[in-house]
Image (cartoon, rainbow, N blue to C red):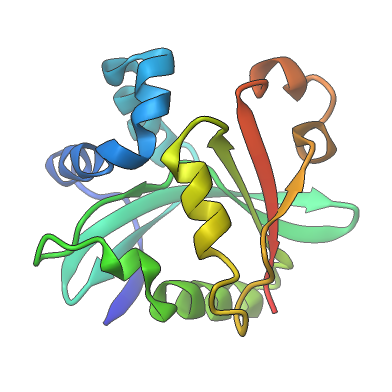
Length: 171
């Protein structure tokens, strides 16, 4: 069973998750460097609200998020997802209905319209966002690709030139 637990994993757990996320974040590792990305994600967990994804008592992922107001609607910016394996070594938990249902129910109850996800345009993470979210359409609408400047402002264009941004509405 998946649980969302507020808090930051210890450093050893984070490093394990980062290493297990290799295939999804490899494009970013190549773009900015393994060590720099690892430290950027670690610091990111300490700069906003952070949750751990716990599958059957085992930390399988974590991520920080930030609240955004977009045209009067409350959105969750899923900033630093670091998603690894469960205790059996599987990543299937990420593709489960629980991974869509539980966060969607929780965030809707907290007043969120949906979430913002930004991914390197060359990465497998982008493909995972496009193929995964909305699969269980009872919880999310299909991802809508948007111009990053429509979410983060015009000054964001230079910093996010490598990225694809999505709005994913809760149902």
